[in-house]
Structures are given as C-alpha cells and as structure tokens.
Length: 310
Image (cartoon, rainbow, N blue to C red; front, side, top):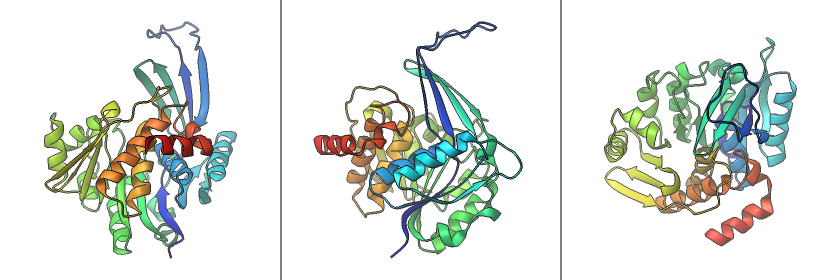
C-alpha cells in the first residue's frame, strides 16, 4: 500500500487578511481595518491541510524561510496531520512568503511577497517520496517559478510511476497563460480552474467552449463557478453540481478547499458527481470562517456540516 493517498509539492506561507477597509485606498493616509486574521495560506498549503482534515494521508514538499512565519505555517500543517518531513528551510536568508488580502465585501485586493514560494526546484525533490502515493496535486503553477520549467517532466515521471495527477494553476500574474502550460496539461488527469482561469487557459470568453476545448487535452476538466457550484467535462460527458447555500464569512481559499474535497473523493474512485458534490461541500464549508483553513481546524463542526449537507 502506498505511504500516502496524495502528495503535493508547492508553496507554503501565511495569509494576512484585513476586513472593513475603505474601498478607496488614499495615499499617505493611515487607513484602519475593522478586523484581521492571520492564517495558514498558500494554495498548496490550504489544499494539503484540508485534505488531511477530510481524512486523506498527505505528504507535503515545500520550502520556507528560517523565520516565525514559516514556523507557524509548518505547525498548522503538522497539527492537521500532514507529513511535513520534506519541508525545507531556505539557506540564503529568504523569508517565508506572505499574502496580504484586502477584503472589500464582494471583491478583494491580493498582494503577495513571493519569498520562498518561487524557490523550490525540481532538482531538490525526492521523487521516491512524491511517488509513494496514489495521486499528485500541484497548485500555483505560475507562482512556482523555480519548479515550473520542469513541471511537464515531473508530471510525466509521476504518471509513469502509476500516479494520477491534478493541477490548479490559480491565476497568472502576468496574464499570458503561457510558460509551458499546454505541455503540462498533456499529463494532467484532472484540471481544476475557476471560470475565469478556464477561459484564459482556453483562450475564449465562452465557458462551455473553454471546458470543451480543455477536455480535448485533459482527462477531466472541473470548473468552479462560485455560488453556482461546479461543472465537469470528461470527453463528451458534461456533469454539473449546484452550489451549497451557507452564510458566507470569508471566500478566501474556497477554490483551494473545493480542490481538497474533489481530490479526496477522486482518489477513492468515486463518481464524477460525487467528486463534484464533495468539492462544493468543502468550498462552501471553507467560507463559514476566516481564511482557507480555519473552518477545517474544527473537526467536529466539519463532521456535523458534512452530515447535514450530504
């Protein structure tokens, strides 16, 4: 039996979320936030944490700085049950990355200091560790500048070892959607963009056309459409699943939490409908607390939510 259900190689940092700021950020003024939250961030970190909370055995590969932010992030993952034995510390003095999120009701500004996020390289990976699983997941394709040039090679090697592969690119800060993505997608079993990302990756403004186009390359294309739930394309098959109605406290990390819910069922061999439903449940549950992982730290509340909505 493999050591893990899922392995992940990616970024690990904290999110500083400020709520209640004025919409106009006036220069040279001291602007006051009404609330704040300092929580585990990074798409890779959120997915790993929430997969473990949902019962998956997770192995995590990353690089952090020799600083307090790295310590906190590592502790949060470890407390969730994620194996962090392969998380490295940067030796060049680079600090752990940090994302500052300025939440303005239905929209937000996202400011990221990359720090060690972009430092992890292919040559530093322990392939035996990553392949000791049934499935491999990668997030933040465009932020991982050190790893990205050899992602297609990594995917190809993992698939040859018998693993399935999923990818959530997250946003491309440069807006080009190039950088070898099409080559990487050739080895992806499940592609997990949101609506905007799917359109950008496919080069079209029509969602259905984007999903159909991407499904010609990827085994399963899963598109997150916010409160409306999610859709999936597998060849000519199209499946949709409605969103789960909850009182939204914070949407940060909802897409990453969806990934955790979907992948947790996918590795069990569940149907596409079941995977979508689990993704929608996890994404909705994430929004009931600040940040992408805080809701999942309460295991009893998580179990009760699942029982109520399953």
